[in-house]
Image 1: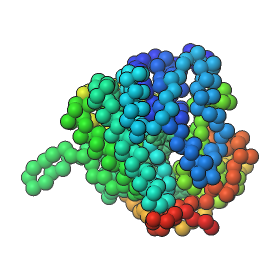
Image 2: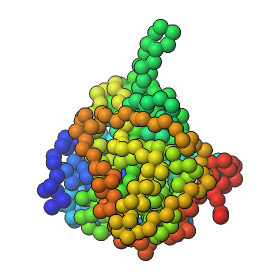
Image 3: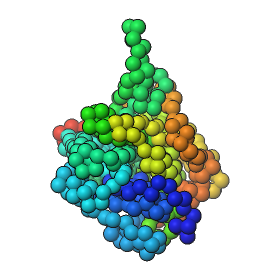
Image 4: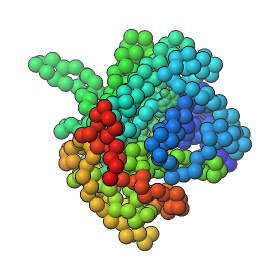
Length: 404
Ligand code: NAD
Ligand code: USQ
């Protein structure tokens, strides 16, 4: 049944770097269900971060090998697995030469802003892992698969919160009587977000210098967990982070609501970001694969469907939670981050809609897709993991994790 409901698409051979992670696993199954030959590349470091820091996903996930085997049984589709680090060029080049991808989707980075602000070592790890990993992917494509389209996950956070509208990647600037279309100004809010900015510059340069084809997906904050494929068997369940380091705003608030913990709004709560449902993440990635960039082209899509402030999210959860009998409280906690708490925000996001994206909207889906999910897994929620855990101001050569 997983396979019959699926539409065909381009059937490109897709290598998914970071395919054991939150967005990557859902995307791998989405494409595999539609008949795309898929190879997952992952060094399992995300599972290791949890082990190091004493964190855990809300959902009981099995090993990568077990979940891939289970997918084979459920769908009849084979998932190729390559366990290794893309910072190791020998490993990556063998994987690329072996699988011969038409498209590489690159999710495989350290993606937590708080993690990158724990201390010097974690900041260095984040930028090394992300920037060098991506450079290796660019060299591997140039040398072994020059026609391969790179679909790279960037982030809306590359733009920061400027006091003007945010465009999709480029802005036309008139200056002293001359005009040019230039990369939109970048202002990262953490060493993690800055790593994505460095990646974007490297991608842009490689498309010019070597005529590679690349799409940078500047994704907003993802929420949700289930997709039709991850619910096809309990062992296909996706990970769900709600802790103070890897948990993202909405997914954290839903878990907090389920255990009657006041929602942790940082500071004034006017921080506004783009958000999207994980079921739209997988569709956006398929749209980018099926409509590839040309050689020499560097495309940027802003990948989100709605924008909300943190206060908006809190009110929506309070309203929807009440329908399930939850009395959701909202608390303002001192902001552990350095960021604008009241600001202008208006970001364009038309290119994926033009390619055919039909978004899932938050208010329509929150109860079914998330609040009930968190309530179902309530027994696994560890209240100790909920508090904000890293203070931007304290990052130093010593660890800045908050103990209180
Ligand atoms: P995740 O941490 O759940 O998954 C990332 C995966 O990449 C992990 O399985 C990890 O083991 C793997 N990985 C990391 N470094 C690697 C390396 N050097 N070699 C091989 N594998 C490596 O993260 P996610 O939430 O699925 O995010 C995926 C991508 O999407 C990231 O690039 C992230 O920046 C971007 N993104 C995520 C969100 C979000 O809200 N989750 C929003 C915008 C953008
Ligand atoms: N926030 C709260 N309370 C919380 C958690 C977060 O008020 O309990 C606030 C943060 O201060 C921030 C906003 O919510 O202003 C978003 O925080 P987040 O943790 O949900 O998102 P962020 O740190 O930006 O990172 C996440 C992913 C990252 C991705 C990014 C997309 O971890 O990989 O790049 O979302 S974006 O925000 O568009 O840059």
